[in-house]
Image (cartoon, rainbow, N blue to C red):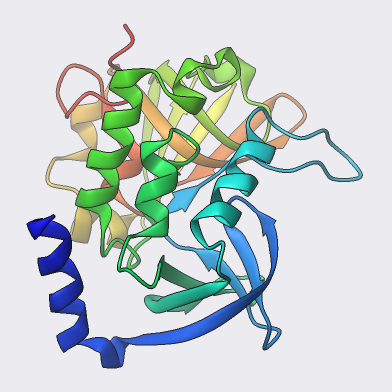
Amino acid sequence: MWCLFLFVALHTVAEAEWRRGEVAKFVDGDTLILDSGETIRLAGINTPEMATDSRPAEPLAFEAHEVLATQLADRQVLIEDAPQRLDRYGRTLAYLFRTDGVSVQEALLRKGLASAVAIAPNDRYLDQFIQAEQAAHRAGRGIWAVEYYVPAAADKVRGGYQFIRARLSRIDIGEKWFAFSVEKDLVILVRRTVWESGFNYSPGALDKTKIAVRGWFSKKKTRATLVINHPFMLERCGIDPQRLCNDD
């Protein structure tokens, strides 16, 4: 209770960073529309995808949608814009809080209905989000108890957001990009500038190592590509804090 009070108090002091909104529609577990027409995408997490014309809903997508709606049942929300405010679709990236100061993102993570993501510079609450995700993972809640979300091999990339575990087979150090390959199935790309500013080890240290990655994969025929711009999204099995690797 004291921690919640302190959290609310600290944000009250800095309430200029918050703005109030009223929810008109819940789109899915991590997207909503305000009555002003503004679309908000929750920063720092990803939830299962709802059904589209081209693909069925992912497991627990409806449950994530319902929990988001329940968290904001009074339709009132406090909005803290992320450092990089807009995504490529023009949606506002933001951290959302109930009017009592509770983080909506953390609530979804603790129920296992979201996973943490980090896309620089939007990693403001990453430590808290990791702790919430790990609590759900250890308890086997939500996505962490569903076979669909178990980290897959590199040749099983579906496209879209996914967890993958693999052993790297090749590293190409280019002038602008570092490319880490898993046979002919997957290439993981990291900009040199991103690596030099965010990673605390040499790219060569990944040679032949087993890793786990999370993110949005694009796929052409049998080859998939993943672009990473934050160290959290790439885990060295047996070295880094074990999150996606810890089922071994």
